[in-house]
Length: 305
Image (cartoon, rainbow, N blue to C red; front, side, top):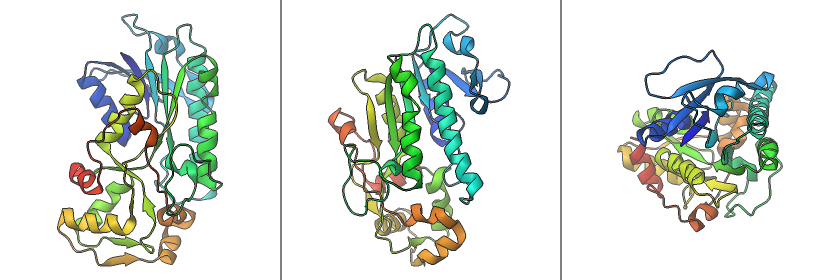
């Protein structure tokens, strides 16, 4: 297939592109600078989400005339990249809404639109859920990230109206050694400085990088799948259990603990997400037949290493 990917240089996007290229697919990267030749076999098409602009002609057909079969939209400002100032919260919000609306409008306007759009979202859609087990039937939460996720998913409406199958990938914490929130934990735990965050009772819904890529491709390939899907391992664990698992796998002590007030001093409003609880399960993925390579937190950590 010929598949376009936004956010192709990010943690998940770069892994997805590698996987697609290894299997012989044509990959089109949407980039914000002038397109340039790439050594990996992928091609580039320019877009500017802030101006709601995409080179539609180049997106619609490749140099060999191949049409676009699918789009995986992952672009957006990193949730944990900066302290949540008012300005950065606007950046998080606008990068998701403008990017998604730009992609959806462009695809809807193509003479031969792709069959599927898989658009990123997050388990933050549900808000803070405590120790309740949450699947895709649960309503949206009311906090900042939940509101962002609701608008983020609604922004795909033009693609759906044009008859494009749309799947929303509500992703949990991706376990990877070299990026994302978990990538920041590994150096601390390797030094023996890792430990519980807050009271440790908050649930973390995690997924290994390999399973994240496999799930995205599963949503692309299966023509019967549309709507929201939780991309998280079947058994979410508490932060205390994560701490213990990191100690087991890395053979390091985990006696350190960071109290909630300290997290709030350092992280500001984002501390709510760190000590907040998301006990989310992937009911629809499992029902559709997806099988996780790393269903437990120990397996996900070992895979990341």
